[in-house]
Length: 494
Image 1: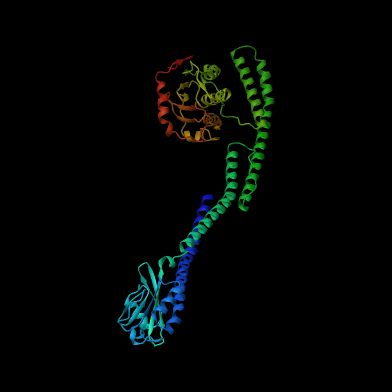
Image 2: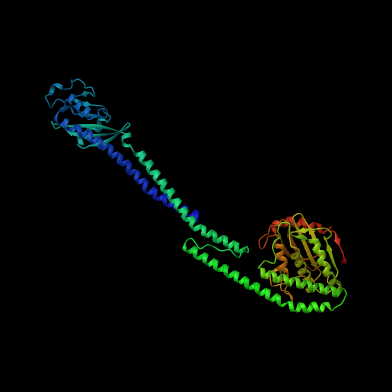
């Protein structure tokens, strides 16, 4: 918008300057020309009274010299008038001696240097009115003057080109400077007006970006033109409503989570009365973990902090350790249901920029889906692949698969089976996307579903939906280790 205003101002001002400066420059040139020929007419008029009285060469030469223009003035007297007036008589005839400034031929008298042609002089004498003609280096003014004898003499005044253009170049330079100053001034004013309009719009954009990044305190100052002021007021009102809605949601989540404390307390008391044994210990562990998760939900809702965030420098966890720990938990239930399982690639440390609780929650969500949506006895596997710039976690099963993977990835929709909400896969997706990775659902080598978690190691978060074309080469390179991956088996698959 700012540069558009500057360009419009530049174009309009330039057109106005051209529209006024060019005609004014032409007028100045014509005025200089008129001034030069007006001076020539005055010089010719100064000689006219003397010609009406006498045609004597010496007297006329003195008159021309007194006019100060003897070098640029010439007087042409016809032959019939050469011997008339002031006693000159017929004795001066054609044999009269030539004067210092001109000559005589056939009784005609010429004083000064002739620049115009004889035809032009004769035409002026015949027409009886002044005329101008172009000569080398300028122009001449031919002024007819009536003699006492009734003949017509012609006074020739030379007007050099420098006299015609005197002051024109200076005036044009002044006009050009004034035009340039007007253009620069208008551009500067338009730029300031553009800044006044653009800055509030930029602050509005920055505020929208900050609010989108989760900075709920982002507000926009109400300034600038009336339209932008109204937009700023509407944005601030929207931001306040968003904060209020989020606060209400957090309070609701905290209240609902707090209601779970009563049944959890009953479960903990009942678990304590189960006695000893693997099943009892597992039940008590599950109840304790559930209580910790509920407490975490309540604290997160009260503190208004996001549940999943990108890990900072130095943060993260050992993915192999978390995989072994969670498989140790789920292996007991797998043994009870007769499921065969395996773990591959978790025999050495694999550092990832994800919090331990987030990775554990993601694995629990995927493994819980396996136990919830496949029949007892269905085998499953967890593969961990470590690459140069990414880590892949594969959770696969030998079930019937997911008919619509895209719908399953949509939050709140799930796989379409009874009891599926889709929130588990959403937890996994947000965890992966917090590192710049993503989640894909496909068919596994076991015949069922394979969920692939792509975790970036560079620590730069990607947009909400990351395209996969730019990473095809890297993903192919990371998939190669599957053939020779080291497998730690607690129970081998057939």
